[in-house]
Length: 446
Image (cartoon, rainbow, N blue to C red; front, side, top):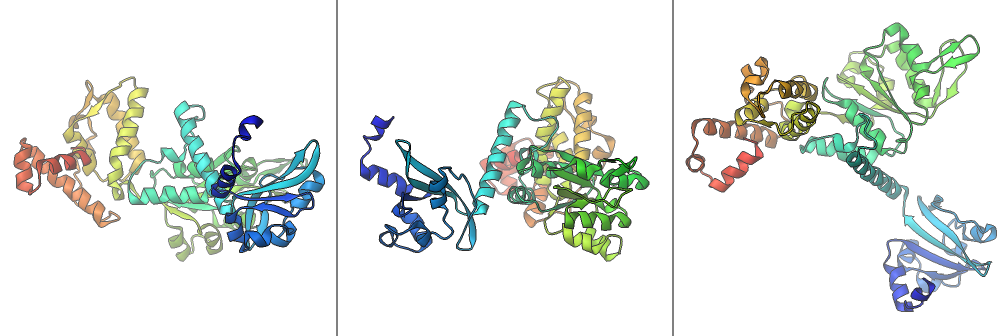
């Protein structure tokens, strides 16, 4: 290896150091700079000529290069506060014939946000790898499990990628059946807590008289503490579902835990420190509950800074196609019936339904019709009666004009296809080319 490196000319080595994404600095035994690349100089607002020969501490604020040489121990990704921000540099002693002759420093993450973004990206990539190899499924959801192409879903996924590495609480609001837990678990799986527990508790399913003990724990026999859900999530994430059902008397105690990072079990005055990231969900508007004095305003203001509004399925109808394909494939495999298709009229009927039960209702319907279908095709007659009878037309509940136009366009195309088989005739009636008609038919899965 050393012989091959000798083949590199000084010009090539210089080009590598100058064009790499990192900032570089090299100092001698006296901690004086003998090399620094232009990128680093531009950040430090100093010319290379001014920097060379000076003590590193006179050029780089809060430098610890001299400590690396004194101790002979490398510092990897050690936070370095400089020019009003934190960077994550690596500092490594240079050892020749057993003697420290200098030190080498490089900056990979130029501020903490760079590191957070990369951390989130790495976790997202690992999620895809693990998903493909089925090594870490166990019914746990990841960002790739959030299906949809609508602007609202794309925006939510972008937000999750940004906020996942933080410790901040997250509020998820959405109607029943919108899949709020998938979004909560996606945040956890992209966070630095992914290797620790994801604990959940539904405030609406636990008797109110047991909620405090279940959440905060209880002192038992004056000797030990029976851990509540908060303590069980130590180092990980606690997902409190339907926080709107938590009694106001307990909301104050939860607020104190969020502010002070301590939990007080029942039956004791002792407070126990906890390290937990809180994700909370509600199936109704907490802001409206605050206005009606049904939810504490101080707790609301503590948890609402990052709020994910999950739209109902009827407001992101363009996501229906991907959701149906995903669930149909899953349930077909589970039922041992591969290759099941949905006929055109059945597709149209599913698209026109309003889905008041949201994604959960869609899942239940598809799971049932996979078993009810005769042969390999799902026809209209196997759909539930209430879906066949209720045909939703134009709905103003959609988020955007594009979504509303998409819905109306699909209805018009379906009406023409029901009454005319010749695509050329349909295209002429609509005033579009046959190729455009085929593109629209494909887009609407008609």
